[in-house]
Image (tube, one colour):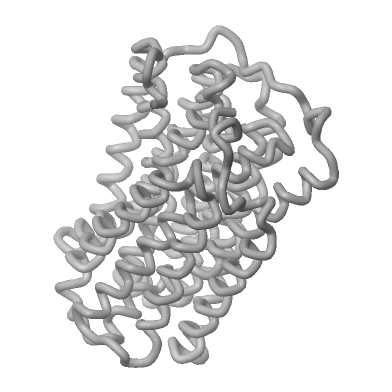
Length: 398
């Protein structure tokens, strides 16, 4: 187990970093659950409102790896506090924005904070545990991103439905302030920056780098597939007969069910990585497929979204652990590369999905998302070195 024989300070630190990544992803994906309300406020189509997601993702895509490298030797705790302050400012600007352009500016600020935080938490986690536990510690901390991605949308939707989307963003601002204060007092400082080898380890080769790039590519493809459709899940469910008043409850249910994907992946990811990824991908395909046309309606459609999101949540830890396992570069840069690829997928998926939805509708958008997800499965299956069918006990321990 990860926490066995770790000092209390390290355990507290890992949970604090988990809370950071949870807050980060919740801030990132919250607009998905309140997209329609935001669009109505500013008098724009839902597809155009998706730019609030794209703007955030753009800054992370561009900034994740460069910021990781630039801040490698700066005090970790100070940077955590700076990045969390960026989330506070971002969410506040979004909450009070009088125009959609200013709202997107706030999202750009949040994207920079997100790019910085994702490099910090992996390096911080590596510093809190022995070297042999680095991969597991980073995977645990990034589990907060999985949970945030699952619960952030329905949580924001529920608050938005009850009190309005601006209130939802004010609440997120308050949560970011509270977390910043908790981190300032309770996150144990590190005595020095994480000491890591620059560049690629000496044992790395073109083969190792190719494996790493395949993992990053598979991650990006699945994120494109998911965000093509899920960015617009609220109008999608409305098109399948769900009432506006039931949206927040539906999204909360799909988020709660999706946690099963995290649990399932955790049972097999260290022994059978390919099975974890394939199982998640197939759940995505079936769930998305049931949302084509009018195969299902009402709460049956909610069940299909839950299945699709369960598969997606299982894929996230599979690709993160795969990137670390490849050992093509140091763990923090591997995490930043996955973060950058994820947000490139969010950017492309949400932006392209908005355009397709606006001009041709779900009749084209849904099968396109299915096709892209199928492509991710094929890419993984044809590269068993990146996602092995089984791992030996020695490989697992390493």
